[in-house]
Image (tube, rainbow, N blue to C red; front, side, top):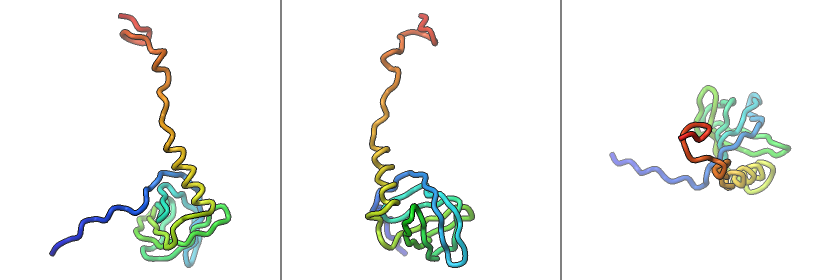
Length: 121
């Protein structure tokens, strides 16, 4: 039996922290999106059965999703329609923009050469 090599992801995942409400068939639960791309998300604090369909509510927008994997306290969902607009896409773009800003070295120019806090030799 031969296995196929894993396919690379179509979209870059971005770390975020977005509070959402997930509506399943029988209930709705609060969760937090911690990993987001145009094609899907990881939601912590919410769990629905695999292959179930749900709605993700954020800032007046409803995004439809299918649960791809599920654990007792988190799940991964795929969006059948890619995120291209709306508040959730805007939050993704803001997070990507913030991640693109390089960290600035702080206090390197004020550091004394020597041993210890006071620069003793």
